[in-house]
Image (tube, rainbow, N blue to C red; front, side, top):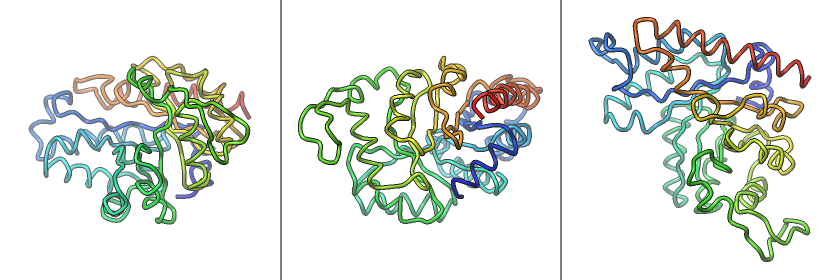
Length: 280
């Protein structure tokens, strides 16, 4: 899927919403537990309810891996069910030595046919470059995350000689990660995870990565503000894919869960449509 393909979906649906499929067997409605594949049945209902209001889906691999082989089967069925014109992200946060990363890339891009995968940059270029070998696929690098522990490393001030980093003598670690990763990929195959709970940093990151898309978690139950994210992060291609998981998929745990998910997604889409008009 190309950058223009993503932007066209944004224009058609007036939305930059990604629905996170963090499907927990302990949180889905009880009546689904009687079906042959409760995880897939839940995901199928959520997709049917939200497909008109979002441009992407993001299964979180941990929730499926925790179920063992049956969970991975549910995941594959879910990915196959999502319409081809929507962007599908494997939220896997992988990152290992080159030959291992090559196998991760093969798993996500060939076997399961995801459009993108989230990766950790901590081990450096040889842990990320194998993912770039697939045309039409995307690498989404963890840059500045929304969790409390992000300050342990991501905000460390790093002084010294940073080649190719212009005349900046000191930067925070997340800035170094972004500037370095930009030399490995392009706006056509590289995105960054930027947490919504730190909106003032989004404009700082936008200056570093002017054309790249940002995958923005943290809107909704985690407290991120959509208007602030748009104000600080939009570029002329929108440049944002904002993820919402729990506030949509668990909007209700009763028989009306799909209707509740539809209403939650529609509400976000309507707000996004207004924001796109403002920033047009």
